[in-house]
Length: 200
Length: 272
Image (tube, rainbow over all chains, first blue to last red; front, side):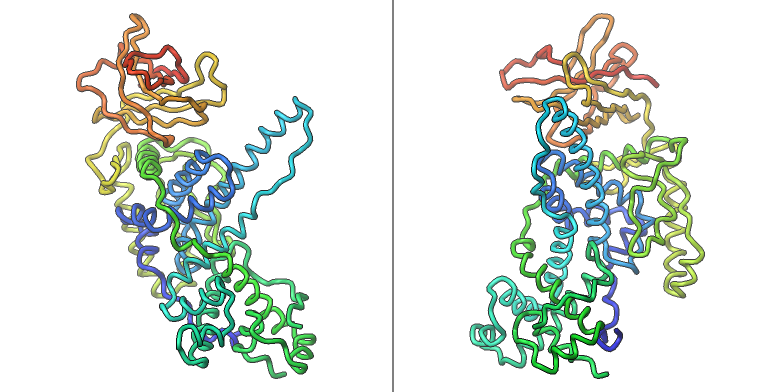
C-alpha cells in the first residue's frame, strides 16, 4: 500500500488545533467556515428547514462541548463536524419516521417510498469539495474540467493550452490528494470490497 | 509482482483509457490494485457530484445566535447527575470516544477533561506538548466557569463578564398547543432571559415572549423570537420576577396590535 501512497500526511489546519484547545474565537471561525457545509448536509436530508437549522445548531454546540474528543491527528475538523451532523440528522430522521409511523398507523396508510439521499454520500461530497477547494489552483481547475465538464485529458489540454503531460500530472496529484482525504474523512472509508471490476 | 502504475490507475478510474490486455490480467489477479482502482473510481464519482458545493449559501445568523446562547447556557447549568451516552462519535477507530463530557442534548457543566495516557504516548513529543496546552486550557476553563457562565453574545465570541442563573422555568405546551412543543427559560444575573424552544407549531405571524404576573394577570412583552430555537432577551431593569413569575410564549399576528393575542403556545413558572 505504501508504494501507492508516497505522500506524507496532510498538515493539520491551525484552526483545527485551536478548536480542540478551546480557543475563544475558534468556534465562531469554525462556524463561519463550515456552518454552510453542515447546514447543507442537514437540508439535503431533512425536509423541514427548521429541523435542519436545529440540527446544524446542535452539531456545533455538541462539537464545542465535546471538543476534547476531537483528535486533529485523525482527521480534519470539517470531517469531524460532518460526522456529528450526520449522526444528528439520522437521529432526527428516525424520530420523524417514528412520528410518521404513528400517524400512519392511525390513518392506515402504507409506508411512503423513501427517496432520501444517502447521508454518507452527502458527507463524502462535502469532504471532497473541501479538499478540492484546498488544492492548488491548477490541480483544482483541471479536475473540475474532468469532473464537471467530462473532458478528456486531451480536451483539457486543448481548452487550457496547458501541455498534455502537465495536465496529466496535475490530475494525478489532485486525485491522489482527494483519495487520501476521502480515506481519512469520508463517511464510510476503509477497505472496499475488492471484487469491483470496473477496469474492463 | 509488478503493480500497475499509479498514473495508470488514475487514468483508468477517470475513464481516460481502457485497461490494456496485460493490465486486465493483472487486475484479475491482484486484489491490491483492484481495490486501489475501486477507491479511485469512487473518489472520481464523488468528485463529479461536488459541483456547486464550493459556493454554498451562508447559513442564517440566527443559527449562530442559537449556538452562542446554547453554549452559554450549557456552561451555566450544573452538571446533570446521570451520565449520558456519548453523542459525539469518535474518529476512525473510535479510540477518542473516551472522554465525552458534554453534548448539546445533555447540557452539562464543565468537567475536568481527561487525557488518555495511551493516546498521549502514541503521539510522541508533539502530542505531549499539545496535551500540556490542552490541560492548561481545560484547567483555565474549569476555574473560569465553575458556578458561573461566560455569556457569548452574537458577534462577540469573547467571554463577557461571568453570570449566574438566578431563575429558570421549564416551558410546556399550553392549551391546544401540540404537546410536543416545549422550551426552557433561564434568567441570568445580568438581567437577560435565555429562551430555548422546540417543536413550536408553525404560525402565520411570529412568536412573542411575555412575563406574566399570575395573581393580577398583568403582563409585559419581553421581545420576539427569531427563526432559531434560542433567543437571548434583555429584561427591564428592576423587574420583579417574584410577581412576574410566568414565562409565556404566544403566537402573534402582524396586526398592529401590541397586546397579547390570547393565543399562548408555551408557559412555565420561574423558580430559583
